[in-house]
Image (cartoon, helix red, strand yellow):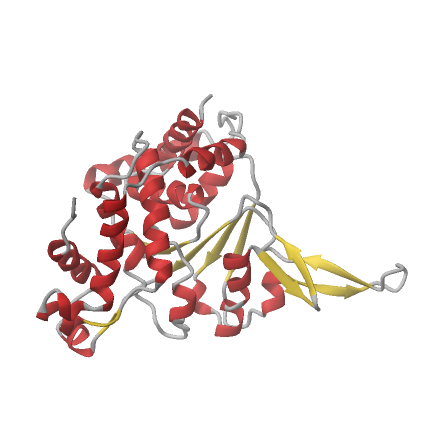
Amino acid sequence: MTPQEGIQELKARMSASIIGQDDLVERLILVLLADGNMLLEGLPGLAKTRAIKSLAKELDCGLSRIQFTPDLLPSDVTGTEIYQPELEEKFVFQQGPIFSNLILADEINRAPAKVQSALLEAMEERQVSVAGKTYKMDPLFMVMATQNPVEQEGTYPLPEAQMDRFLMHVVISYPDDASELAILRLNREEQVHSDKKEVKEKLSPEIIFEARKEIAQVKIAENMEKYIVDVISATRFPDKYSKELDSWIDFGASPRGSIALDRAARTHAWMSGKDFVAPDNIRAVVHDCLRHRLILSYEANADGITADQVLDEVLKVVAVVG
């Protein structure tokens, strides 16, 4: 099985159990292939948890779920040293749930900042430091953090520094009526046949590593690189492009934004069966890569302008050169 065939098989298996959220399935696989982390925002019951559980079920890898609550401590995430007097080394490090392949950080905005920051080193550096020692993460590692956009009481909004460390901020909405009907039937079928589930052989994580090697070979022309830079520049210096943009944006995307666009666009191109990046591949990932990296002005918030509307305008005023 080629990496392309393996990823298509993985996508097909996940889509069979996650109905009406095709974009979520595609984005989840894209972020894993791009070796990034994902922030997922959506109302309760929209298959956020089911999606990453399905990914772990179909892929031969580990899954940890961390339910973020106000009383959570950093050591509950990273692990801690435990005193064991019978051993030669009196203190033994007990790994926390962060030491797995796929990490579900459920309702990440319900824990205080010191706990949220415990994820930072693991997400960015792929390591955890405890009591002066550094512990490496597994090469296959991804954090999918979820947050509920409605309930804000008793929550701790993620600081910009941490938001920036997510490759993508994906927003999902309700499925359509046809998908809703299919969900009802699937749920009923799962209840009836809960003891007769077909056990499929799990896909090897090697397909992820092989796919990443091929993605690294995807070509991106100089004019496509310039297009990415121009899109980022339009968020930083909006006054050069239009008065509307200038009144909407206070702060634009950091260099992590351009790196995210490059990685996501090349991965999107590979998943589309191409070995080069086209403008459509960049436009397809702009909103998910940049919506959480913009800080909008008071005027924009007062007028109800969203980050997605701002990015729509950016794509209108920034042209592909060459």
